[in-house]
Length: 163
Ligand code: CUA
Image 1: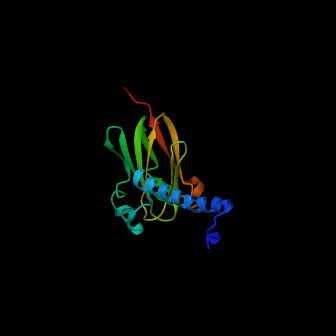
Image 2: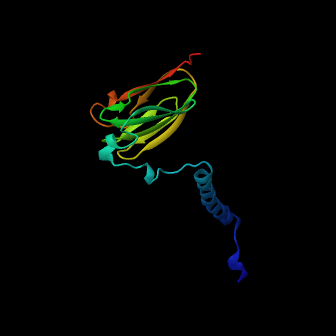
Image 3: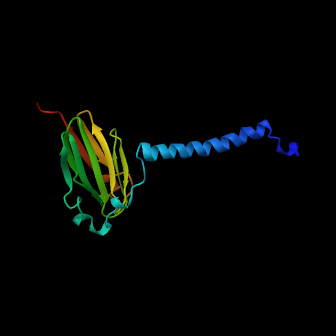
């Protein structure tokens, strides 16, 4: 029954990619997970959404210097504000936004600074960026969150270093 096992070239042209594509995707997934450390936020980044204002670090929203040129900003979103609404950092700073929502789904977008996350109630988002040039950057809520959604914004002021 040798004839039954004949694999035609056109069959092979379908079979090989159908194996190679999922294997390639699995490899890409493994590299991003373990190599680049990209993964879904885990349980440790969840807090009780009804107690945001009394849960650390959101009980003291604001900017904290965690090292030379490195900052963390604890940011709370609510209808329709960011707290803090304005942050100031010197140029060249690396800033990690640690943010959550205390009511509905909001967003945090800082154009030209590679910050673009959803803020879900009780889910803590973390995103790190570097501000390499001075100027003003907007922090914009880019998830529709109600009647005054369009007024929900703040700013990051990147200051020239005083020497
Ligand atoms: Cu908050 Cu739109």
